Picture 1 (tube, rainbow, N blue to C red):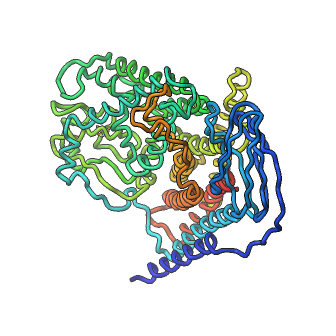
Picture 2 (cartoon, rainbow, N blue to C red):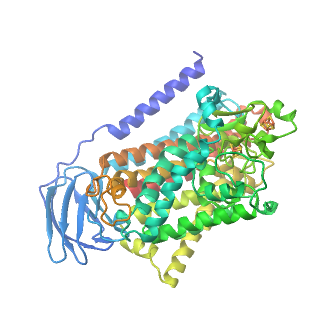
Picture 3 (tube, protein in one colour):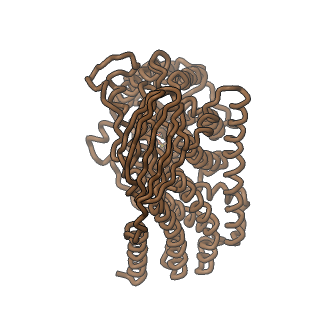
Amino acid sequence: MKRATVSRLIFIILFVGLAGVVFFVPLPLHAGQQAEHRLTLEARRFAFEPAVIQVNQGERVILELESVDVTHGIYIDGYGLKAVSEPGHKARLDFVADRVGKFKYRCSMACGPLHPFMIGELIVKPNLPYWRAVALALLATVGSVVYLWHFAQSGSVTRVSPHPGRRIELTRIPLLKRLLQWRGFQPVLMLGTLFGFVLAVMTGFFGTPVGSKNFAIIFVWIVWWAVLKIVLVPLTGRLWCTVCPIPAPGEWLQRRRILVKRENKPLSLARKWPRKLDNVWLQNFGLLLVTTFSPIILTLPLASGIVLLTFIVMAVVLSLVFERRVFCRYFCPVGGFVGLYSLVSPLELRVKDAEVCRNHREKECYLGSKEGYGCPWMVKPWRLQRNAHCGLCTECLKTCPKDNVAVNLRPFGSDLLVKAGRGLGEAYNALIMLTCALLYSAIFLGPWGWLKDWAGVTSMSGRALYASVFLAINLLLVPGLFLLATALSKRLSRVRGISLKQLFISHSYSLVPMGLSLWIAFSFSFLFVSGSYALSVISDPFGWGWDLFGTRSFPWTPVLIELVPYLQVATLIAGLVFSIYIAYRIGQQHSADESQATCGEHRRTVRGLIPIAAFLAIVTIAFLRLYLG
Ligand code: SF4
Ligand code: SF4
């Protein structure tokens, strides 16, 4: 083994060992006096008062729950304690606070639309898990920068290749290839998801207004969202777009067919999409619109039903006016961020040999053939270098007569280093997603009742004020701070021949792994806490008293909730380290002269990394504060 490899291994082992010590080694704790902490906890829709309870480890806590409007319950995470109070009747919990950390207490009785977010915090001091997590984040930041500095100095960090790592071609598996080339592959999957979608719209319109008992809320915003963020996007990129039901009716109308391919005139004016709008700004706008109103959309089934129906109607209308899938490519707010985060995923569809494409003029993959349709996403497969706009519809696998299209496995994050296609629209998409994860965590998972009231307010003036603050944080404050970090980075790295705007755009791609990890961490809170609602809702999707599968009475049961903080810390730290690495590689791309990079260039690159790493560390610590602090 080379010396550089050995020293790298030693560094990594030391780093992981130190991280283990920071996080796991028990500290001698103050035994705590057998003091008593008596308090009355007032519960009203949708907040507890006090919202935060602080006690010392070892104290006896005598807590009286008093509901002042409707029946409320309390469940304390980590302690597993429960009580229910009806208006006028107090309930009592008596326990010793023997475990340190932050434990959410939440309403355990469905009490209205914001019920799943009626949360308070019990902090048992000293809050060691939080301080350990902060120390870990700082250690990960400093360790990553030192690692890159040291190995840059020794010259053992290699130059950037636009397509690093090897590919494993999955379409070499004959069965998989046959399946993907089968015309029914996508329509059959879409028919399945379309059934769920129609049910979600109908339950949104006609089902119970109580979110935790309605299919539209539980299956769209908890089950689908968590599966999308935790599994589908990180591992398969845009695979969701393969099965997404929203474009299905419009596309089938446009083609006048569902399963077979026929050469007939499309049922569409088949207008071309204007070049000026060939970007992601409409999706950013849609994303901001939906996220501004999300406290209402996520909690009121009717609002969810209206949004879902609007999406499908838009998709149909756009299919009848424009060629191909304009809704997916330019409008769908989900498609916007799924496309951005799919840059991280280890799955890609690419041509096998660019030379074959160069010599093949017919371009059936784009224009279509009797085997299938031309790329519905307006992508020219032979130019595909990144996942962002490929909806994995598999049409080009069917149409390419040269068998020159493959589905590959590749290293995580490969596309983040591809320069082609970077733009301000995607940079803003990365920043909006990062900021929304922060704001959602504060609104939905924080103890601040006033913030939930404000976010859910329906009066025009209140909503306008909330929207203004929400948009200002998304469009000005966080991008402004990131611009500042980028300007400092430019100064420290003394990079030449690139504008601040271009550097801002490039470095924004380092936020993508972190953004994805923030959303995964956020989704853990929902899935483990509220996932059990799915069992009762599947039997009674409208909340009308049905019991289709005999599970209607399944009680709300938080699952493995004590694991959630650990999963969140691990995810956030992994996202932080990955983002720092990508920021370094992007900085390396902008070194003054890549072809003749010297040790000095590497040092300047690492110096330029420091402000970006600091920004990433601050974001991570802000999330740790919200989840554990
Ligand atoms: S049809 Fe096949 S070979 Fe021809 S340009 Fe498209 S991907 Fe390349
Ligand atoms: S590139 Fe191929 S798989 Fe991707 S959207 Fe276009 S036709 Fe579908």
